[in-house]
Amino acid sequence: MAQRPYIVGNWKMHGTRAMLAEARAIDRAAERLIKAEVALAPPYTLIHATHKEATLIAVGAQDCHPADGGAHTGDISAAMLKDSGASFVIVGHSERRAGHGENDAAVKAKANAAIAAGLAVIVCVGEREAERDAGKAEDVVAKQLKGSLPAGEVAEKVTVAYEPVWAIGTGRTPSVEDIAAMHRAIRARLTAIYPAGGAEIRILYGGSVKADNAAEILRADEVGGALVGGASLTAESFLGIIVAAAEL
Ligand code: PGA
Image 1 (cartoon, rainbow, N blue to C red):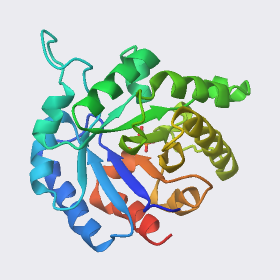
Image 2 (image 1 turned 60 degrees about the vertical axis):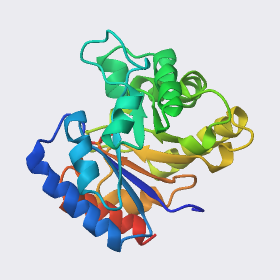
Image 3 (image 1 turned 45 degrees about the vertical axis):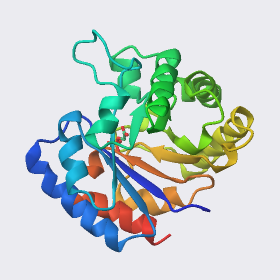
Image 4 (image 1 turned 180 degrees about the horizontal axis):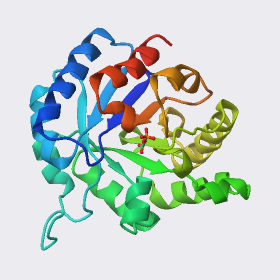
């Protein structure tokens, strides 16, 4: 791995201010484990407070609206996230695609808006189980990449997260060989889409990453880090993954 492994916690809709103690503990430990690069995406309500607590880790959001502002009740713009202390935003998570009807064009609009506001983006892609069973996983992911990635030579602002939908929160993961094969396929798409910088884009794996499977997944070809849901909710479980990344 040329760059430091990038370990990102996605807290989803979990966390009140009481959980800031976990963020603080993660941040302090990350200071010792500098061979890994660590970030947290708490819910909107904790972004600013987490940013204030953090001395080292990056803080980001889990979604944004594509517009700069306006009559969009309940939505948050990328510029607002930046103002709150976010430096990145996750877009296109499968829970947004499935639960909020976001298609590739919507994800791309969000990614473009985030980059225009000065944020980095983590663009999520991944097949459903039936698509994998039908042998279509790589085609599905290639189409999502083509449709969702932000426009222009913006590779240095982009991270991709490959998250098979059937592996999220289930305790199931693809084999290391399947993860590596998909990551190689993603790399080929990225170098085609971004001729100048596509080779450097980090490709994270996400879906049931835990302390006990992190090392073998992170060692797989073209895996540049992990996007972690459930196991990022306590410092204890998240640190198990960060330690594995730092010791690669
Ligand atoms: P999980 O979630 O680690 O709980 O499987 C990963 C994600 O949805 O980003």
